[in-house]
Length: 537
Image (tube, rainbow, N blue to C red; front, side, top):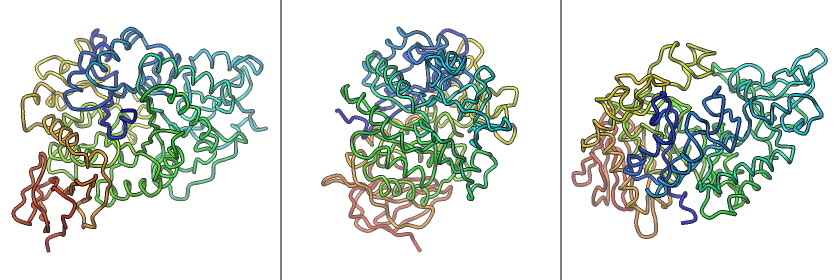
């Protein structure tokens, strides 16, 4: 199973919010290990851990100050080894986040680099002289607002930070930086991790000439970052050679994989995914933010999948509807659902039918909704800076809910770092565990059905020309296949079929002769690909 990742279901764990076992209100590795039975029972293949490395936590671990140790908030290296052993015992692969485009400003490398221009780490970060008038060297903005440059008086230079001021960007043009990062990744491979999720993989290199980014004529959003086309501050062609070095490293180990986060959308993301996964000496797969958007139409899902298939024919896609950076999908798409439970059931049926690897985010198997927070409850830097126009990411990061009759829904005996509110606690695992009609039961049933269907795991995909709100496509593998139909609407719809024999899987649709009724947010898998489908007039 060297390419186990090609049909994998990956479950993302946000460690701060999964399970707290020491009562400090923050999730930890021992808590994750204790709750892995729940994850394995879903029928997933791997877990992805968001950052657990030593960090001052200005960006919740995405600001690393030691790449080869565990932050005490989460435990110890021994706890990590025990977690990996338990996961492997349950048949789960372990993927860890690698945040290597930047470090924390508390990292020893940066502490040395900022001292002067002649120390051994002087060139490890992106430093630049000011303009004659003292302003930053170019117009690059930070993703989190303001300029991407911060003045360092000791060097009398600016340093680049694509994100927070406390997240200085590493200088990948300096070969020793690459060498050092590769060795930190080898450290985790030697400890038995099965793969890496590469955060902001298209941000590694910058334009050495520091040219200004041009304006983006298509931008109409509220944030300032979108006002530019970021052709010089990221997405640089130099990245390919480093990705090949990464691939050579993982290829030294058996059955390891890398998935890169492409922080762009539209055609740019497709072009990058094609470039980064070309051949067999770069990344194994990439994912973009296209399906993490508010769009919920048949055209959007078809356009996204076909765009990758045509634009990145060598690539292997990884799809998800939610993660730690966006509003949970049952809340994001609420207007398209008859209720959140129906929407949640349809979402997993649809995601499990898409070609490629799929990724679930903790709590979505409970139909978890976005948590509404007050300003006083926030911890996320963008929300604290731009409230109320920007609500931030805390609403999707609130703790996992386990037991509905326990304080904080069983997440912690202490005070949770983000609140557990009654609307979220009502969806606890204990309340859904024995309910055959729960969202949790639906997730288990759909993932079991996916495992039983080679066409859903490896099949070719052909979309059907159907009017909104119906999404239809066929998956064909060798002699078997399925016709997959989804009603993306809170109202029932009917379709006329030809050559339809029988429904398969856990569907609430009804097939009466050659007439198919899809209820609100309904879906159906029909045996075979000779089925012909048309909307009822």
